Every structure is written in structure tokens, then in C-alpha cells.
Image (cartoon, rainbow, N blue to C red; front, side, top):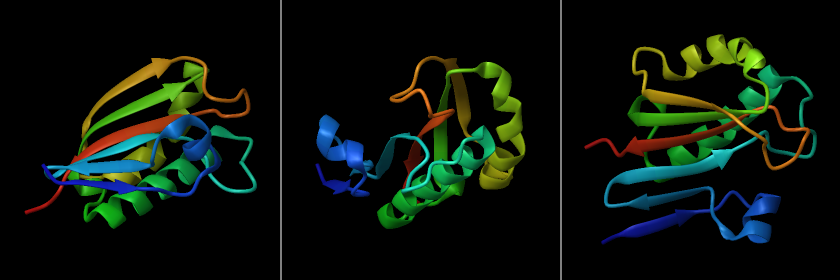
Length: 124
């Protein structure tokens, strides 16, 4: 089995003991991703954009893109905010929508509004 680990260098990777993504036998597993960077937007839409940007970077490094995503999980502390993300998710996945699940739960910190986790298959 061929395994490639992709690290973003994010603060929680070393604290928790994980990496942003793992590629195993042609499947890309991207860890749950919240807003990244020195400045975390306060609104869910800004956080969604930040998370999607980090996910896109990991997918690109793995050799895939949003069109290759087959599964996505969304985690939110307040389900009422999710609709604000719909246009952003439609833009990211477009004509290649993955299977999806949404779960309302607490996130790693109270300031985070959304966490996104994807699974993709490398293109042939």
C-alpha cells in the first residue's frame, strides 16, 4: 500500500497528532478543516471560504480537486447558519456534487462556526 501524508503546518496538527490529508491507494482523506490562518473570520461564510481554501490546497497537493470529491461531512455548532454556506459549496463542487452529511456539534474552539471533511478519489 502506498501512503502519502500531507501536512499544512497548522497549529493543531502537532498538538493533536494528525495531518491535513492522507493519500492511500488512490483515495484522498482530508481531515476535518476549520478556518485557517492568523485571522479567523467571525462569520460562518468567511470561515467556510477559509476552510475550502485549505482543503483545495491539500487536494491539489494530493493530485486531486473538488471535482474528485466523493464524500463531504459538514460539522456546525449552529445548524441555522448552514444556509449561508450553500452558495459557497455550490461554487466549490459545481456539477460534481459529492454525497454529503451535516452534523450539529461542538467544534475544536467556540469561535469556529464550521468544519469540513472530504474524501476524494485521485483522477486516472
